[in-house]
Image (cartoon, rainbow, N blue to C red; front, side, top):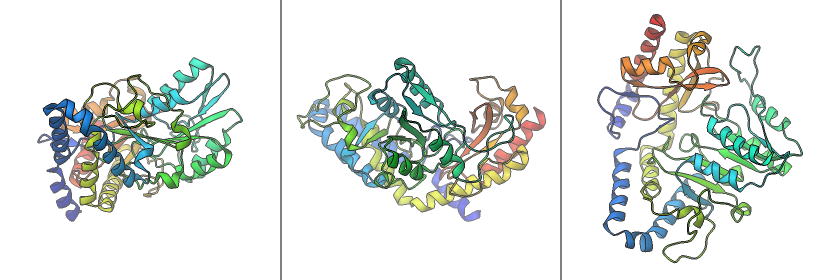
Length: 405
């Protein structure tokens, strides 16, 4: 991987990591490149130089331009997108906007993000609805993580859980705890045929995959842009199918109109939530331009190759095989390897796993241990700044930790 080494080492200079830090958790908190950070600071400077001029004369046009640029990139029109702080805010807006009553059902599967479960459980408890969560994959016992060999093991349990009371299907484009690319196009198509709205939770898909919202034809798409796109923290979006736009309810109530006198739009309740710095939203085009200069296919193939290399190195050390086939159709820039059952049992609930903490304390390496239904996974995320040498060092550190644990 010598050629890849030189490319990624040059890429590291585009970020601002401290010397000695190995960062293998872009999937959780992906920092911006230097150039995107500079663009963000320039927008903040323009705001602070003359806030009246910025909010009344510049803001609407700049926001519209950024939404249009993002729309071009994800197969949507800017007028169908609204910027929000992150995918959690987007999902809360969807949850507050959907009319639910006693006995209604929200369909999530057992690999969805914990915060998403929490959002919908709270809404359902308030109105007497319920969350339905089918189990995906196959397995021989509860002591082993569920495994996948065919996409039908994702699609069929979801579709089989639909009833006459199902009001919304929620599905990750790429799962957070287990890093699996889900067949969202097939689920969307089936939902559309049955007349059931569908909301895709897509923070990990933006940049890692080719996202085309027109082709997906979903009702809602929620995403954070600080992950694989490396846009600033505080930049996310919500896509809303046009028949839903008039029904959308804000998660906060403010003026609900443009300060610059622009005519009413469905985004108004979310565009203006009081005085805030919109620099993260307006910097999104710079993040897109950075990855386009690098080359999207180079980014995707290079980071998948590193994730695949991490898989090959860590599986023998952990004595556990990844739960999905070894194919870019199943995983992209990150891979999750199950930890040995004994190590999972030793971890305290809601605490940083000892392996994750030990890798930082002893090796200044940031990597994430995730949890899905009682099983722990070492999830390795790779970006342009990572190298095969870092994967080798991580593997040796993991081996040492287990030898001494």
